[in-house]
Image (cartoon, rainbow, N blue to C red; front, top):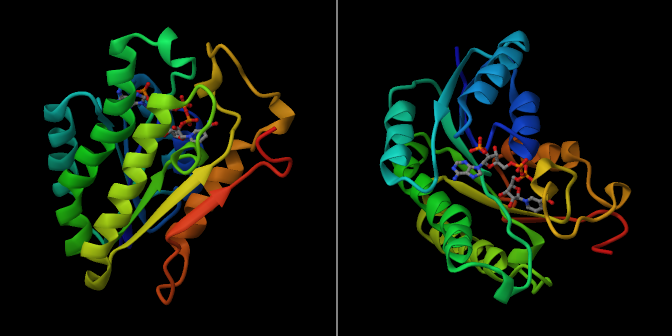
Length: 236
Ligand SMILES: NC(=O)c1ccc[n+]([C@@H]2O[C@H](COP(=O)([O-])OP(=O)(O)OC[C@H]3O[C@@H](n4cnc5c(N)ncnc54)[C@H](OP(=O)(O)O)[C@@H]3O)[C@@H](O)[C@H]2O)c1
């Protein structure tokens, strides 16, 4: 019997991929969301091999409201235990503000704030009905200014405050919301950036996945509102 349904956005790469594999075990049903279907299908096979009860690969584009609504519809058709959302999908354009195009600024706000807010909005009724949980993968850039992270940081800060405000509405109804703020993590998000930290100064992707798992699996007598996860050497 499925005890927990978990939706992972941005499952096709990096933190979302690693988290999906870590969470794939008997008793769990997984909904894997991202734009790249081939990657989701590959991941779904790996999750099945780990004994997950069921797994659905769901194409979803955070810039397209209809696509997000379809994700909500798919999740609404599932059954079994609490519904947990790992709101992880995002991207980063890290460069001086005047070197960004207006379209890039808009995209940063869309993919890192509006899209995740839409996902929360369509899934929240299911989370509430099942007294589930939400884990938002944000960033240290949500809570402090970082060079080159103007639009990215603003979008993550917006997601951060939205989630904390939403928690005021839902926590007394049994829903916990955790915001995880990782520092630099070794994932493909750094490919093609003007600047990239040294690999050995970044968090391993498994560290962030484990923090997400720990938040989801923490006892019900506590709420992990915020987790700041830094490389031991700091931001460099
Ligand atoms: N890596 C770091 O240093 C770091 C640090 C702090 C926070 N974070 C945050 O961690 C989260 C995961 O990032 P990552 O490092 O794992 O990067 P990643 O490997 O590039 O993965 C990003 C994921 O987001 C999905 N995505 C991007 N644009 C999308 C869109 N328009 N619609 C739907 N899905 C979209 C991608 O899937 P598709 O391309 O298949 O759609 C991919 O699965 C992000 O929110 C990021 O801001 C990362």
